[in-house]
Image 1: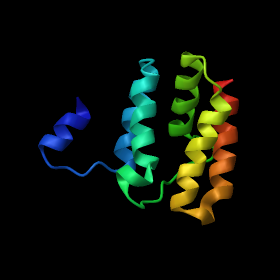
Image 2: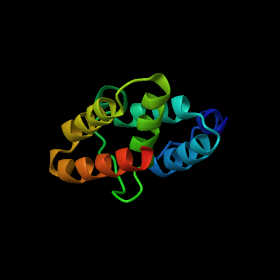
Image 3: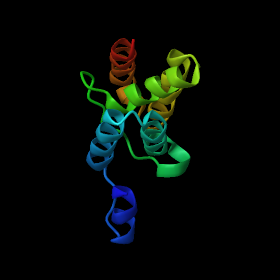
Image 4: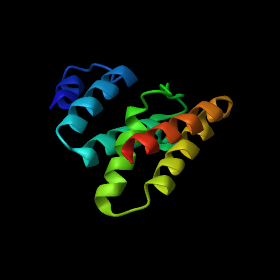
Length: 110
């Protein structure tokens, strides 16, 4: 609902907005919706070449992807590392941080 309102009001959806929405969705157990939102943000074809700022100690987007993969019975490592690959395509200089964030997300997801 929040994203719909922002679109209606022509408000640009920033990473901080997405992070807040993903936190709420995660608390509600809506891993599919949260991971789709993050996947859109890191897809170079969908969002252009905008680097994603990932907090290594709290990588909520990658965590949501890992939890959704677990829910679906998929390998979370493969899915999260595909996300890291997408982010690294956009910003290769941040690849090391993205890999660390992936490790943190996978560790938190279990």
